[in-house]
Image (cartoon, rainbow, N blue to C red; front, side, top):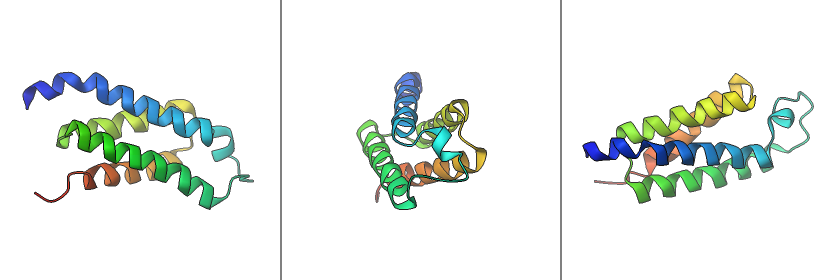
Length: 107
């Protein structure tokens, strides 16, 4: 269990790639625009695909509580760095954490 803490680079890299994939399909310049050109349905599809990948990553890597928290934190800061507005960052990060938490499944 302790040794998993040393694999945090894998979690950071996944968070970075996940944020970059979202940015490619829904760039901050579009997300931050008051005249949104992408439908809410399409944004939902983009995020749902990302969360499905995160869910799978969590299950495959058996992320514990610390790993899930680290993933959420790294993801949040990457989105902030990319220039997304805080409201979007908070909403998407919360949804990511819920998706990853659900990956635990029943004990």
